[in-house]
Image (cartoon, rainbow, N blue to C red; front, top):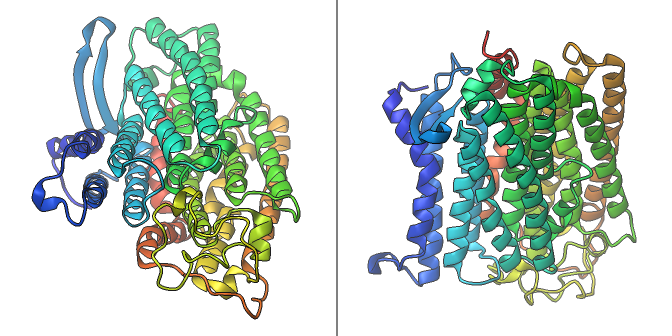
Length: 557
């Protein structure tokens, strides 16, 4: 690690939060003549790569300058009075809980910008696409960096508009209905959440999240805490999403462009679970203790429900959509995160935070891979993919072809779902692509040695011994149900690998373009980090555990 002064750390964090917003404004301006390149579209896409790359570099330097010997202490803090009448401040800071999420957001956004430079989604001008992508990055980064309840709400809401337009304007079939469903669900949840945040701030006399965490609910009556947890929890549960508030997610993922799905699964879902850990656990512990068994019950139902939905989509003849299947898998995986949080124990909460990061890496990779499969074959229909019935008339998958830039949206002529003919499984036709899809699938099912294992295992351990005051017999039942869910997860993911990747190639089946250079560049960091997280979990747990211990104790440790 490197020694960086506190003032430089403050500047880096402010740059990380505000930089993408400035970049979004600049993206809408005409490019200088010397930077236009071959076309204005290419120039603005390059601008997106440069801005997100600069933010990623700043995030890495911030992580290197972070004092890893004291991860429970807020670092790089900025505290400027903004609305004195309400005691609202521009309060920024990071600790061992928020730093990994900050770096994950910067990494995934950069990889999405890099991928989009070579494979632009079908839709309106790339200028608007890049600007929306950068606004989305600002909102997500700010959510993990702000330490004021009202600023948290503003950052939390900032992501809604850009994600709505990314789905509605650059998505595939059914994109407008999916975008409306996404924004209506999240807005309704946010209205209730705002009431809960105001209830906490006005009753405690401050909106400062650090002061509220240190107070540990002592200035709030039990009834206020219960109402606050219910109101705030509903808003966070919609964004997570928790069963039964999940129904917007499959439609949004199915319709979204590839980079929209990557950011939605890899970053936006984490905003909800982060709110549970950062706000509800330390600020309203008695309220959380009241609702913890119900939260755990909804979590394990989501685990089993998501797995059964995936099994239903994966079976032969169901005409299941691979993107929709991965979306439902997120309901199950985020169920483990919520179960870990509901235990209110250091082990469970650390497992939830680990699972958050692992899910972002693995599911982000899965959506990248599914986008590549659709680009080459023209479909994500599992029946068509397992028969290899799509893509034989497609030129997008021809060796050496760059593919149509409009293919990502799934509506262009790159070999539609109706294309029939001979084919073969991915192992035979694009072995590296098939191998990566299998790797991501086994990582997602929680294979030991890969990143998906530790978070789920720690969440189960947390349920085995929940926090004092919670019913251990009830949580043992939840643990057993969740453990059964891991078997269902393995079942549907192995079915997907068998159907899509395995099987002999037919004699006349054409080859598909294997992993291209830009795809290799965009996917390699996710593969490497998934392996590192599985083999060296201490790298992440060493950051989160001290911060979680202090958070749960109200800053007394």
